[in-house]
Each structure stands twice: as structure tokens, then as C-alpha cells.
Length: 108
Image 1 (cartoon, helix red, strand yellow):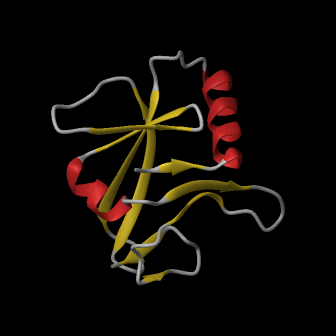
Image 2 (spheres, helix red, strand yellow; image 1 turned 135 degrees about the vertical axis):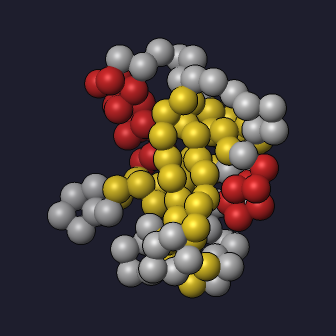
């Protein structure tokens, strides 16, 4: 399962409304090589599913990820932090053994 915090839900809904994205759009999350810690998170909106997608819905938000990325994201929570010290979207990932200072990359 991939979880969605209230803060992320609100920001996702705000972005979808601003961009004019309908209910057929969902959040696609993937993990790729890169970043200072070795692996990076990628978030985007999508409306097309792929054969091996893992689909979750939490807090009224549909989250889709490929099977390989799901192995890194299992039991993670997508959060959003705004304000002066805010860093935007971030994952609280119990699988990460370390993260970089900006929170955009991690290692397992």
C-alpha cells in the first residue's frame, strides 16, 4: 500500500483543479536511479494505466506505480509541506536506510 497524507491530498486536488485535470487523472509515482543517495522519486499526473501497474486508493486519492517501484514504496506515505521551510511533496518511506538532505532521494 502507498498512503496519502491529508496535506498531500489537499495539494493534489488543488493542482488538479488549477490544471483542469478531470477525475480520470491519478498520481503516478515511480522510483528511478539518481539523486545524491542513489534513488529518486518521480511524481506526475497520468490517465493511462499499464499492464503491471499497482493501483492504490487512500484518502480519496488514486496512486499508481509500476511493480519495480512499488518494492521501494511499500508502506510509504506521500506528504506535502509548504511554507518557508517547506520542501513540497516528500515520502515518509520506512524502507529507506538513508535519505539526502533535501528529501528527494534515498537508499535502501
